[in-house]
Length: 493
Image (cartoon, rainbow, N blue to C red; front, side):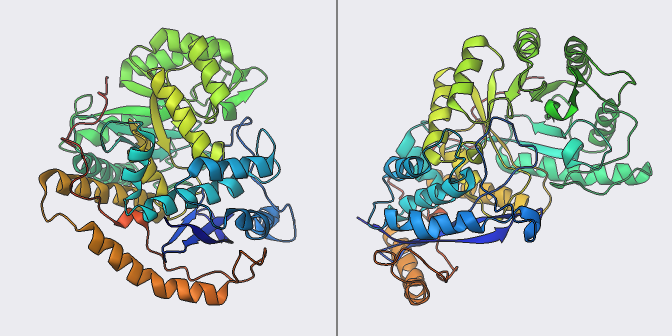
């Protein structure tokens, strides 16, 4: 049994240039893992709190050196000698040390970085790829399948450039496609969309997460541009793909009404519902995320009753990956799908509990990135292992988004190889290669960082070259999926 020998955190920058946390964990068997946590721009008022330094003289107050010190000086010594496969025990230590309902003491960014590192370490200690380890450990899905991906192509709101009100306009490939075909569709349409925008003389720069930010007269004009773009490709709208939107309606909510540039007067909640019905009918918008402000409960219930039979009504800032919020939404039928963001709650165990409740209630889950991402591909493995029906990682653009899509491509290949038993890997050889590659790194790490079993503080980080569990292919004797060409759900238009 491998045990945790050291934990070390440091401050890094996310894709927006905002500080976040990178956490490295190494074990007594020589295995090393590293992970980093994302941060958000559209932050729900009910989600767990991040810990920031609030020193206006450094990083505009957004530094995370306090969180880093908590990990290195206080959390790390509590984890020495622990079995990384005991995820619940490790997360319980974090929750006990924080002692608040919303992580306001340690910060959800602090706790999640350690929690994610433990999950990766557990997978590596078992010589499993991360997605397979999660699937076997939590049994949230009977088979390993790539989720249907939701690709953002145009950004507005806080992710745009004051061009559009709706935060994300998305394309959703039909679920009969394999992941490889889905990615091909997304890349084709993304680049063809740029051509169309250039021809029309529209702005074709990109927003915060990589979607285009065209200067259009109304939000509805986006759908016309997208329909025109699709006609210039080999794909057929409502057969090969559908539309989705992330409204992020709390950004539009002022004095009890919603402001969109589609008309001069603000929308009441009932009028906005009529608007959603209209675009549902005209443009087959079958994915509707955060359509109303978090506390506009009557309208959440109304939209689900009105179009919920044919449309995914998705709670993100509304539910904030929170077990109590989810339970209330299920009981009152406020929506029918939940967006999952681990950093909204702060630990792997709490995130898993939310997914379990959603699945038990017949809801579908959407595993999501954040606007402030890193190159860590953890969320891709988590989506597959937790059996999410959908994954939302942004546009097929920018390195921190592409890292997730490339990881899904690798997972799909591994699943297919295991299913067809083409050149099956030898797990013992893979582990030997890992140990050989990590032994030298561990030696260097121990030289740089003092033994945490005797010293609570560290001033230098271990070597960052790590061998991740996600690079190991599961043993061929392990049960795998029968097919990856069909995902776990069917999109409807």
